Length: 159
Image 1 (cartoon, rainbow, N blue to C red):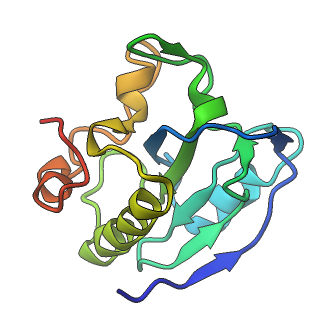
Image 2: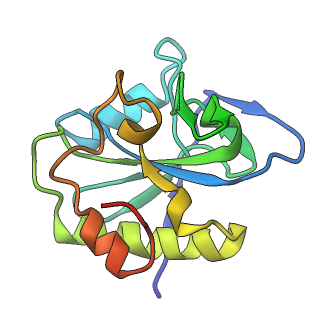
């Protein structure tokens, strides 16, 4: 497993002691390119961020350290948990929302998910899409996201 992560940083996070990581939330950027997406995720005005972003070519960037709370989930709920920013990691995939996800991007996502799952003992049933935790508000990673590939790799239980 070849995992290379480039740290970029974002000012959009909170420091919380002993944050219990339970979920990984997958998003698409909704933007045309990586440069614009990263600029927005680093913008103090936009006040959004994520822990990781994966380019269409499969390059992985980290914007917020895992131990900090990134602002990616917003108003959210899963089962009895609310406001999932506090106990989740957010991964953004550069994709406008209606595009097919490139194989190189999904391969990098699988490598990252396997590493994070092992590192934090995340249950595959807790790897979700933004659409799952904010169903009336969000639709990412969307209908073109290959959940079946994640399921084959024991990285998701849904679909």
